[in-house]
Length: 206
Image 1 (cartoon, helix red, strand yellow):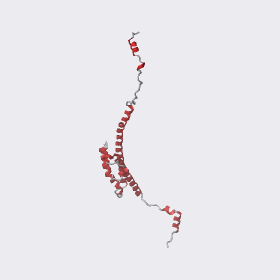
Image 2 (cartoon, helix red, strand yellow; image 1 turned 45 degrees about the horizontal axis):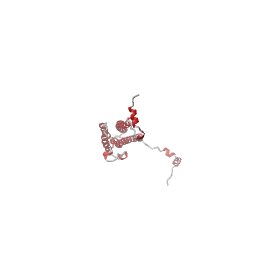
Image 3 (tube, helix red, strand yellow; image 1 turned 90 degrees about the horizontal axis):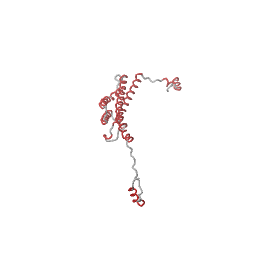
Image 4 (tube, helix red, strand yellow; image 1 turned 135 degrees about the vertical axis):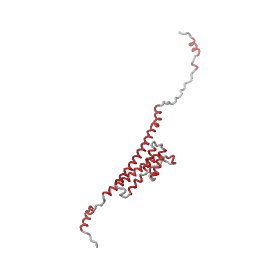
C-alpha cells in the first residue's frame, strides 16, 4: 500500500508545492529562442513585402487573367516570386531596373539566412542569429524603398495628365445652348400705303 508523506500532502493541499517548482532553463536558451523569433519574423516581413509588390506590378492582361492578389501569391516559392517581380517591373518600365535586379539577387539568399535557425548553436550562435535578422530587415527596407519610390514617381507623372482635361473644361470657351428662332407675325400689306411712302420719299427737303 502506498503511503503518502504528510508534509507533501499539506503542501499540495495549500498550493505551496506548485510555487516551489521552477522550470530550469538556461539564460542562453532563452536568448537563442528570442533571436530565432527575430529571424523568423524578419523573413516573414520580407516575404510579405515581396508578395505585395509582385501583386502590384502584375500585368493581368499579359498574364491572361485578372490581377493577382497577395493571397494567391503567398504559397509560391521565393525564387518564383522574385522572377515574377523582375518580369512585372520590366513591364511597368521600372525606372531603377538595374538596381532592382541587383537587389533581387541579394534577396534570393534570404532563405539561407532563415535556415540558420536550424543550425546547431556552435555554427549559429547569438551573434550569427542577430546578424541574420538584421540582414533580412535591411533587405526588406531596401525593397520597400525602391518599389515605393517607383510608385510615387509614376503617380507624380500621371497627376498633370489627369488634370489637363479638367483644366481645359474649366478655362475653355463656354458653349451656349442654341437659341430658338423667334417667330414673327406676317406683315399686313393692307395697312401700308405705298403712294404715301413714295410721296414722303420724293418730297422736297425742309
